[in-house]
Image (cartoon, rainbow, N blue to C red; front, side, top):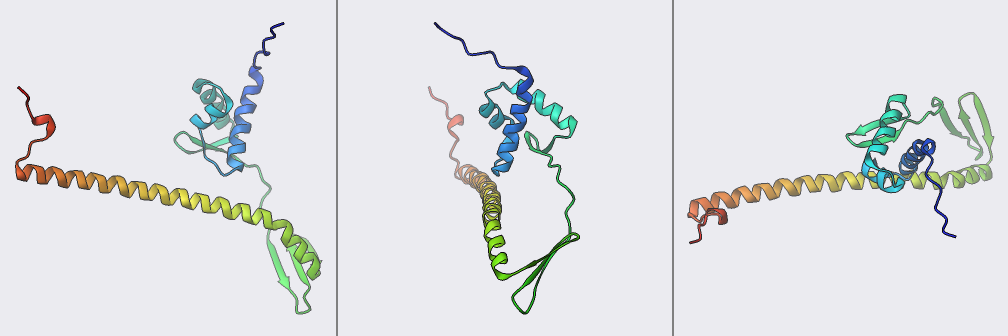
Length: 169
């Protein structure tokens, strides 16, 4: 009894590609066509076709060539303010809603948002680290090019031929 796995359903591939991009975005990772291809098991042409459709539909936006992210459909931001009163109470205003919070409520709300704040800080740190690494890499490549140019000038001044200029008989 050798059972073959059911063939993949083409109608779900687009949602698989979108969900993969969404998962990468939510994890703070960059969604490139190669990463999406690897994670979905689809070919480049299938991934490119679905990404192109989602870009046209406005579900995705291109961040850089070959890099995309989901377009988030969030409600508009509201005005938020927090006023701490002299007696330890606080007034939290979000849009037209106002909450009177005692110190215990403030601590509980703070602890509930702590995970989100730490996650946001981690994502920001990762982005800053990636930017710093890219900048260091650019400097390293430029320094290597300058060093090669300097070595070429010194070699020519000293009359030392390049290995490609040496003829063997």
